[in-house]
Image (cartoon, rainbow over all chains, first blue to last red; front, side, top):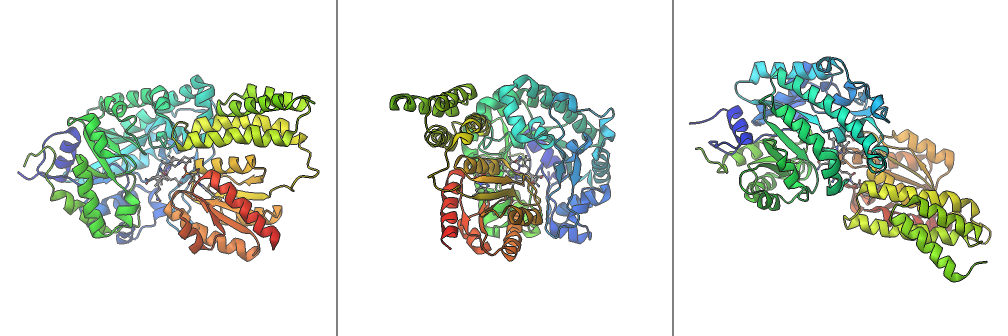
Length: 347
Length: 221
Ligand code: B12
């Protein structure tokens, strides 16, 4: 029996047998070719629900990617808390939006919106999800993502200040992370209420490039646990992602009980698989820039196979797909995946 | 005047204080050093900077992570605040040089830049830090206003790295003598050459030795 893209994606995340290895991601995958198709500008797609939905869906329409993911930038939560977004409207280059105003110094500086679902651009993303569900919801998995509290803290406060505070005054840092966790749960639930088929929790700032395993266990893990629990309680699958070489904490990541764990290209996925055994659903870990953006067709084929051989349940890029990536390389990712036997074979 | 043994003891305390991010120990040893009439410059180099060198090694071997390094830096700065005003400049090599540093427009990744900035300060450079997401014109303006020898540009994304090329053209247009140094994960030595930069380093400690070479070359011109 052939499955729809959506069935294949959701079953894979839940660790159920599928007919073929799916090709999807939980991170942004907007492409310049997709923007051109709908005559959109990158700097503006973050600000209009219809444009955001079109830009996201174009990658599936043109290259067959099995998930459709919004939003593309990391600023939604921070903006809803009061930070100012800069989309670089006048730049000729392809620049991701960034945030101004590092306004948080203590937990008291964080004022949670009374109605999180209607704060900042949350309703805009909600609308984009609803549009995508209405138009593509039968066929494709429509997904969204939220930041982890440590990564979000790095958006609204000076990172040096945060890192030092977590050492010198851990309770003060934890009070901040606690409040931000409430915010993230609120945003995640709004996306789920809009119909998101699955959600990724991206604690990308808590990477081993920056934080020690000890700091992760002491200060990050507990908040991740609370968010995973609350989001999973809605019944929607959750994927947990951290960047960098995560093998030092991979058991902790898996123990959170998210439906799947995602790792990036700096991590040795084979070693993760050995540590975790067969039951945990692992997604990863092709280098989005080197392979998908810069690589040839052969590079993409080889790296997709390599991740699967290393033990991935499905191939995910380690981060967002860079917009200048060609639809041809995405097609190769999809076709190569579809030609491989899934780890849990239900064909 | 205290003994050489006592001097070494104080250097050791400062070094250890930096490594163990023990600000109090560093402050105490630095004050003792000054009170007992030892040379402040030696204290900076053989105590504080020597400690930071070890911290750099601990960071490279993944024993220390960024927060630890920042804590060590705080201990180091506490010592620098005490010793720097006491440095007797007469008879010393003139100040090493002045650097404008920042992360290019569109890029907020500033962890690496902050480490590089710290190493420059330790080595005795005067550093003008423009922060992250800095438009090209701000680099140009700051270089001209401070007449800095070096402009150090950081980028962590491939796209923002492309912006460095434009920055180099503009900086050189205004001031052909300025030395430009690039760094950040996507940047390589070849790319730095291709963009027309004068220097490159893949990490914070080599950045300083590279910069010293660049300033020496400048002074010869
Ligand atoms: C932490 C991190 C973040 C943090 C940044 C926090 C902060 N304030 O810095 C957050 C979560 C905010 C973030 C955001 C994003 N990120 Co990010 N991030 C990283 C990560 C995991 C680590 C970077 C880091 O700090 N490393 C540790 C420091 C110590 O190392 P370093 O920066 O390389 O610095 C050393 C050297 O390079 C050198 N150096 C650095 N600067 C200079 C300058 C000079 C002059 C010299 C001589 C030397 C030098 O010395 C330093 C010390 O040794 C990297 C992945 C990686 N491993 O590189 C991705 C990465 C850089 N991010 C990436 C992306 C795509 C993003 C986002 C676009 C995601 C999104 N969808 O929005 C946003 C971008 C926002 C923006 N517009 O800038 C990509 C870039 C892809 C590419 N090649 O273009 C990377 C590579 C991840 C990936 N694998 O795809 N990120």
